[in-house]
Length: 338
Length: 248
Image (spheres, rainbow over the protein chains, first blue to last red):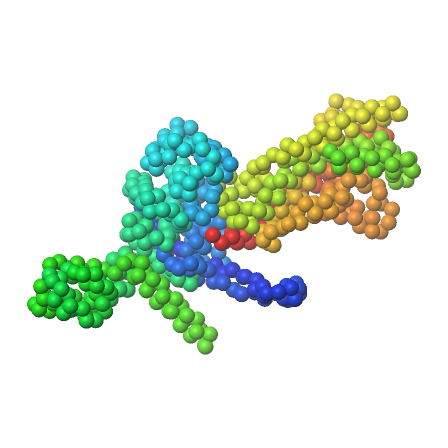
């Protein structure tokens, strides 16, 4: 049985459209206009035990709504979902003991008390035996290097330190399923890297199932083999990162280090040029034509070094988002015209 | 405490003009102050234990932080009802106890008051029933925040509703409108019953033994407490189904 199984899940919000100004506000008391926002539209997804899946999508794509549905925070309009065999929005305590949700933009620790107090509260709420609680807490604190911060009020912690404490609070009961909503948002690269390293080793050690949303491609590259792209509430692509690069990027980036200025000058008019930083030149070549273009250059010019790489993941994903949004716009136009 | 003092002073002035509230109701000055002390205790319990939490609940909904309460493997209504205790409201309850003690002493000098070993436990039990009903009303009011997004008027609504339970029920039983209010706050939202019964146990405005309708009312106070708690739980659960969670 899959750990997470989603079938035709949809969630629509009815949002009040308030017009600007006092008269419009008074008018709104008697006649209210609403707009329907399809946050999640008929999505299907299966996640097996031990998978680390990235949920990618532009802002408002439906990533967080999906995580909130899977955690039972909100109820869907239609469709079904089972996580570890439970229907999330039935909010059974047995289910709630088996998963955790961490939201990078929200704080669940007591603001004025040391994080230790929140951990202790979670210990009692999740009925974790004292020995096990202390062992898990010490292990997690050591892995995240925050043992010396346990007694400091949460409000005095840096954002990175606070996020580490949030993760410990969420993991104190060793959840089988971990839902992470932008856990590295706003963190500096060092803190981001530490959390990535932690999540990677923790997941390998515990073999738990993790769904991660993030706008940082470094998180995705470092952690997830499988990527689900969601746009306008629908799943647009589900596959590996390599698949995405192969499928959605037709180009390779070629960087050549030329032997001399004459050679550099000679190929400086090459199409799809990105930049020249003598003696290096960087340009874009269609994936299928890399061999042909390079052999031609090598036959005619002196080249010291060659680097062929995929375009930056951010660029590829940005292309995917644009295509996904274009597709849903077309679908919306098509359904409106019918 | 200032409010309690003003409240006491106001009724002291009123009783300079009349000997009894309601014709043959038995609510003379000392009986009424005993009633007032009972109300102060129930109010103090609610304001100490639940009021700040109910107001906080509205804020949890507005900010979306209710999400975290919904994730915990513990009853959500319990979790949002008891996180904080507002000790500053407790002195009103202590004043209520003092007012009851003083009024009882005065009453016992005036006439015979019947006490049994069950009187104090029964009084405390019905105070508990009162707290349960008022808590239920508060949960229902707070739950509306889920539908409206926020509820800035929780305290106002609380004041409007509790206005009706601060007086002996006999004052409503003279006119059509009064009877409608009496019926509503006795049978639909039984706040009148749960304030009147504990006060009647000690004050015995109609003397002893209790009339049969007083016994019936006491039984109804228990049923009403259970029904209120069940209704508030239903409203809370229904409201949670509409929870949208603020955007993050």
